[in-house]
Length: 556
Image 1 (tube, rainbow, N blue to C red):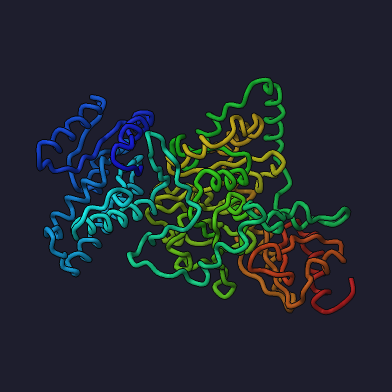
Image 2 (image 1 turned 180 degrees about the horizontal axis):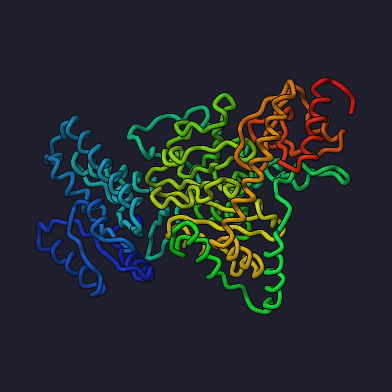
């Protein structure tokens, strides 16, 4: 929370801390050197509620640990911490110019301490608000020491802002939210400013249309449900037939209670417990797509990295929210496994599919862990994790900081028309998402389905369904590999990506009455590829026969 002297920032910060409902811990890094400053400190103490706890320390990272889980940490203020830190470093030498090497070392130490502070915040369940002045906007006092302080203060504020969820400027007792419309000017994890790479410079092109409105490529909104002409066999929609009879009966029974408003508490608790989490770390959603649009609109990252080829709705949501997006491409030569070092350090939100759609690749959890860093949210799309033998996935890993996992129950259970999903992640992030959505967005029937399917009683049938799909997929992949001219990879869901040396593969399959999912709408793929759903044996063999005819150059 930035503001000039007497701007009202301390009062606004105090009200925000009290309204959080969390135990408030004030970190007061100050050394009293004169009577005027002593009186100023005492006034601030007197203004704080008696039940607030105060830590007088300059070790900000240690203060976060001392504050304890679930607290609201109010740092009041960055300015006193910075002044004392620079004083201790010996860079204030009256009217003399500080030694350049000493100054550079002191400035780097300031940034390193603030990054350690940000890392401690990211690793702990706390809300943190840092109060900071704006000396660069006020009267510029003479002397090298004053100029040094203004310079380092500016870099310190940019370092914190790069890792913060929100930045506010206070003027006249009113707060203005500073929009994260651009990548941070200070790289988050390295101290040297640099020119953007060619890939990063491509972030902003074609992102705004006439009148400044965001432009979203229509192909990003193209999905398999619109690609099945009447009379064609559906290989495009990757949803199993369903739901099972016992669930259909339970849903039918729930119709009797439709006069009541939806209450998501039981479904939320069941979904959270499935992954060993408390309810406050889970939010049920109207299908995974709602989660992606909420994340984009509520988190408003400065720079998002979307891993492709992959489900395109997250990128569509981000671009619609005006967020700059960089694409990080998987490579077929690596069996579509993600190289985490390809993700720009500046990206404060990363979206990755696991298992990936349409490639079917399954990145190790270690790859997801490598993407995490202080100030970054990693969104893992686990819409197809139900097809894994161990469906807990990344959703069960509470030890991964800043990771938000999106889950869908529509694919394996045949419920695409009902829209059933949920999100798990840090409670602060879940709280922000919940606050940014409309009320009752998940209907009562969907809540009934989530509660039933997230319960331990459904796990045995889930494993049976997943095992049956895996067996059919293994058989299909073996038969596809026996067809000359095709390239494909091991998959971990209910679909397979098939690449041919011939363009227009989807159109050729349509000539045989088979509607595959077009792949050229996925960034990084073209019309030589299709995604085919794993179906029953007879349908799979019809697909094999059609592909063999196409590759041999024969007519439909």
